[in-house]
Image (cartoon, rainbow, N blue to C red; front, side):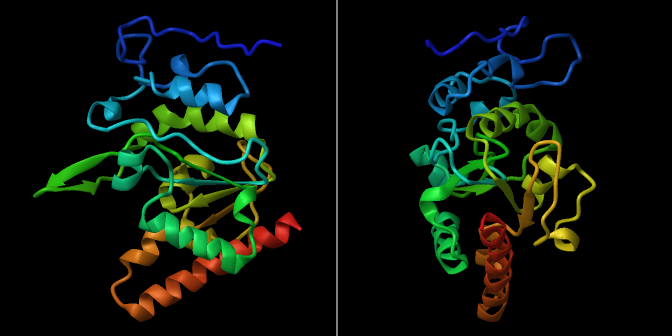
Length: 227
C-alpha cells in the first residue's frame, strides 16, 4: 500500500505558526506516516522554528525500524551537524562503549534528539553548543512523537536533563529520578540518565570515571528491563 505523505501546510509562510502570536511548531511539516524514511526526508523541509537557519542540515534519528530501545538526547553536536547523523561525535563514541558495558546490543538501538538542528554560538573559529530554549524543544516535539509512533520501542531512554524534561515535563529533576523505570504519556517505559557529554565534561579523571559508572549503572537498568 502506498505510503501516506499528506501533511498540513503552514498558512503563514515558513514560520510554522498558523496564527499571529501562536507558538511555532513543527507539526504542519510532519507527514502522517509510520515510515522513518519518509519522516527523515520530510524533516529536511521543516521550518517549525528558526534553528534551521544557522544549522548545516537537519539531523534526524537513525537505527532499526523496530528498535527495542530509543535513546533521545538534547540536540546534535558540531560533528553531527556536519555529518548529518546522530551521536557520531565524542559523546556518541562514549555511548557506544557504555552500551557494550551495560549489555545492550547496539543493533537494538535507535538514536535521536529532542531538537533536530544544532544550536550554537561562535567562539573564535569554533562552534560552541548552546542550550535550546523550551519553545524550540516544544516546537520540535512533533518529530519525536512521530519517531516514537514509527519505531514503537519497548523502552525510551532520555539522555540528559533537556531530553528528560521534553518527555517527562519541565518540572522533572534528572539527578533525583535518574536510573528509575518510569512511565510517561509518550512511552510506557522510560529511563532517564546523564548525557554522555556530561562524562566528557567532568573536570578530572576521577569525576569522569564516577560519571561513566553512573551512566553504565543506569543503562543496566534498561538492559534488565529488556530481559
